[in-house]
Each structure stands twice: as C-alpha cells, then as structure tokens.
Image (cartoon, rainbow, N blue to C red; front, side):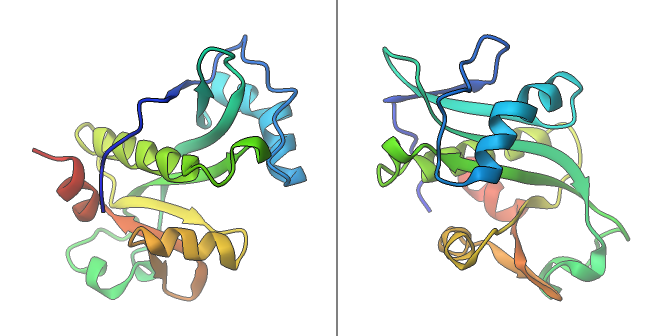
Length: 172
C-alpha cells in the first residue's frame, strides 16, 4: 500500500464558509448529509469532516467524515482479538464521497489515505485499534478490501484496517 498523496488536491477541515450546495456524488443520502448535517456535526464535535478541493476554483471535489467509536472485541477479526479490551476504541470513517465531476480520478483513494493518516495521528494521542467503515454496497466493500480492510465477524459490510497496518505505512 503506497502512502503517497497527490499535491493537486487541497484536503482541509470543513469550514463554515464552504459552499456545500453544489456537491453531488450521485447518492442522495451522502449529498444530503454533506449539505445539511456535516457542518452541524462538525460544530458539536460529533464528526470531523475533511474536504478535498481543486485549486484555484475551491469547488468541493470530495469529503470524508471521521469520529471516535468503540467496537466489541468479539466483532474484530480473530487475529485482532488477542490482548484487546472488551470494547476497544476505534476510528470510524463515517462517510466518504466524491463529486460526480471528479470520480475516476483516484480522489477516493486520496481521501482514504488522508483518513488513514489522521487515524495514525489519533493513535499517537489516544487508543484506537484501527479505522473501520460500514460499506454501503458491494462496490464500496471491494474498495475497502483493496486497501487491506478486513470484514468484522458477523457483519460482512463493516470492515476494519488494523492500526498495526496503518502504523507500518505512516509511522517512523
């Protein structure tokens, strides 16, 4: 897994002045979340949203949201269960989406790697067993599996990338 991030995308935290009205990834639920709720969640610290913009027009090309969560030890893949507490802390990749205009340009990968890097940074301050996501469909599930995410036990649409793999890519 390569950790190189393209310089053409500016990835930063969502701000109050971000124009969210024109974002369209082709999924009504993801569009509505970004347009109506992302800033509200961001303000109350329920989820941090990062946006990718393309310079110089600053149009939002994609976004993702992360937050803290916990999992039940029994849900984790067997190789992760050893020495884990009953409810280990984790980082949730709540949403990730790319505007239709920018799909097919590897922005989804860039956003995912940015989320991985932020998970690494979180792990330096607080416990997290990894980055997990709930895939909306089989295509999304295959996207995560391509980057070494593993299915949780009894929930094949929720996948996790163990912190040990993230540290291998971003750690010293």
